[in-house]
Length: 487
Image (tube, rainbow, N blue to C red; front, side, top):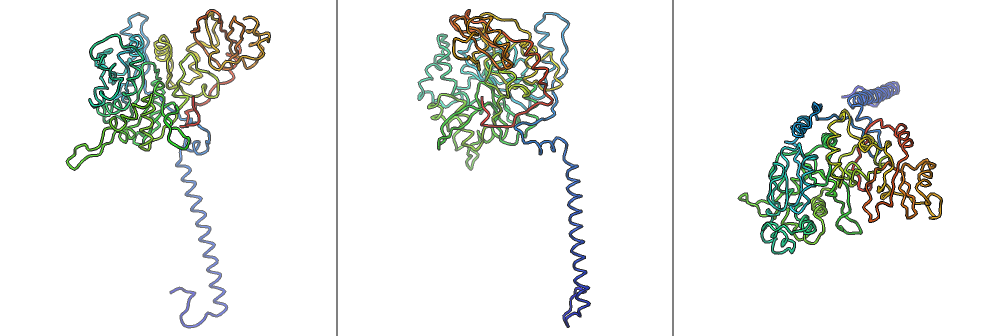
C-alpha cells in the first residue's frame, strides 16, 4: 500500500499537498534520469560507431570512400633479362592466389573466336588465374586450361529445336569454315549453363566472376570491392544495359556481358535452386531448361540471365562506371564519371593494351586502388605529339557550326582554336573540312575510316597537365549501385 493512499478516510489538505509535492518531485527525478541515461547511452553508442560509419551516415552522395588495402604482394622486378616465362612467374608470384578458392573466375569463349584475341587475353588478363574455368562451344585445351564444351550440358532435345545448333554440330565435326557470326548466335545459349557449371565446379565459392576474351579486369580493384560486401546477400553486379520488357513500359536492367559481371554465392544459389522430391530426386527443371524458350527468342544471353535473376527476385546492382563498356582508348578521362572512381573493367581494348596494361599494373605501386586519374598515366595523356591517321573525337566530339567557322579551314586553325578554348583538351582535324573539339582527356585510336589519312589528332598537353594538377583525388569514389547512372 502506498504512503499517500488510504482506504479508510480522505487525506487532510496538508497531507494532500505533501503527496502532490512528492509526486511532482518523483516525476521530475524520473524525467531527468531518463534524459541523462539517454544522453549517456547515445554518447556511448556514438563512440562505438567507427569514424567510417559516421562518415557513411552523414554522406548522402552516390559513392563510398572506403579505405581498402591490396591483397597483392609487392612485385619484384626482374633483373632486366628478356625471359618472358620468368617475368610472368614473378608477376604471378605477386598475385593473391589464395583469393581464388573464394572467388571463382569464369572465362567464356568460342572455337570461332580469333585465336590472337584468346591467346592475348590468357597471356595477360587471366594469366595468373590458376583455377580459371573456361567455357566454350567445343572441348579444347587453351594455355594449360581445359575449355569445357558448355553447350554439351544442355538437354539433347534442345539441339533439335534450335537452328543455330547446325553450326554447333559442324564445330564438333571439326569443320573450320564456321564464321564468327555463327559462333555469336550460339553464344547466348552459354550463359545459363555456365552459371550452373561454375556452381558445380566450385560450390563453396563466395563470388563468381564472369568475363569474356575482350574484357579487361583490374583484379586488385575487384578484390578490394568484393571485400566490402557480404556474399550471403544475393548480389548481381555489373554495367547496366536495358533488356527485356517487364510490363508497364519498363525494361529489366541486366549486366552487360562484355564489361564482365559478378554474382554472389547467395545469388547463384537462388538462381540454380531446383525443386526436390521426397526421395531426394530433382523434380523441377534446371535453370537452362526453365529458360530455353526465352533464350531461343532473345538475341542475348546476358539479357536472359538478368531476366532470370529478376524473376527470382534479384535486381542488378549497377556499378558503372567502375564496370565499364568503354575500351581504354575511348575512356573520357576527367568527366564526372571517370576520374576519382576506381577502374574495375573495360571492354574491347586493343590487344596491345591488354598486354601493356597488365604489365604496367604489375609495376605500379598498389598502395591505393587504381583510379581513372591514375590510369591516365598509362597512355601518357599530356605528353603526346600529334598523330596522323588518328581520331580522338569519334566519341563525345564537338563540331561547332556553321562549317564556315575559321577552325574548319586547316589543321593549324583547328589546333589554335582548341588552345583558345579553356575547356578543349584535344582535337581532331579532318581535311574534308571539319574540326572536332574534345572536352575530356581522351586517347582515341587509329581511324578505321576508309580515308583514315584525312584525320590528324592532337592534345593540348599544357592544359591537360595543368588540369590534372588542379584536380587531384583526396579519396576514391566507390560508386553506389544505380540503374539511372548508366553508360
